[in-house]
Structure formats: C-alpha cells, structure tokens
Image (tube, rainbow, N blue to C red):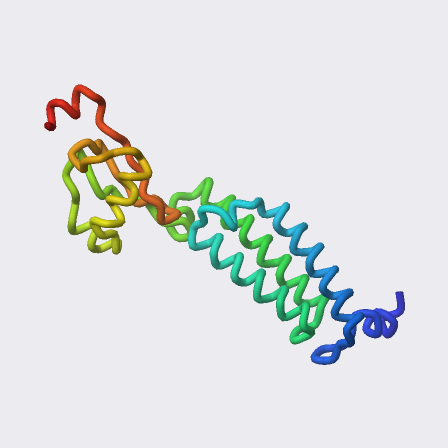
Length: 171
C-alpha cells in the first residue's frame, strides 16, 4: 500500500474523519487485545507496581492513537517496545533478586504468632482495620490465631492461621 493511501485511510495527526477514527478504533482494539493476550491478564488482576505502570502506559498510548493525538504506527511500535521491556523485566525478576526487588518489591511480615508488628504496619500504611478485613476474608476471628500475616508484593494481605492446638494454647 502506498504511504499516501495509508495516511488517507487512517487520517493524519489531529485530523481524522468519523470513518478513519472507526478504522483506528478497530485497529487499536485488536492491537490491545493482542497485547493483553501476550502479556497475560495478570496486568489487570492482582498487580505489582510494574503491572500497573504498564497498564497505564498502554492505555494512555492507545487512547492517544485512537483520537489521532499521536501517529498510529509509531505509537503502536513504542507500545510494543514497552511490552518487550516488561517481558525483559519479568524475566530478569525471575533470575536476579535485585531486579525482582526493584520491580516487584518484597513481602513484609506484619503479624507473627498472634503479635502485630505495629511499627511495620505503620511504615507500610496498614491499619488495624485493614488487618481486620484480611482476617475476615481468611476466616480468622482473632489476631491471636494468626501464625503469620504478610503484606504481599501486590498489596494484598495473606495469612496463615494457627493450628487448633496452637489456638487453644494461645487462648
């Protein structure tokens, strides 16, 4: 296809007709679907900071492309480069602890053997009500019944309950 015809087909920057925007919308939709399949749906599930940043950048890039605030092909190429960088960082995080720490962070122990570490909870911005919510979700009714509770890298709080024998000893 001749580049002139292609530009007429998709419109120019800041100037698109309704049918050109429709073509852009279909192209961007299909491209976004392909990216989602390639990156995995995890970037929209429980996400690390890396996943959230990538999702924001992809959304921003694709929306600008759709409305012709940015040229179509260069923006799609730049978005593809971001996804490639994401893959590299995920691969690096699997094999190098320092990259894992940089892009995903570390989990933080908030409760051990029924005792809250209020200093860590405060530093991580986790209040007692946040802990109580996580306890309800885990089916634990008393902090003394928690063997361990961690603030995970994705921001959720996971818990291990004490065994029945340990609960009776704590009660």
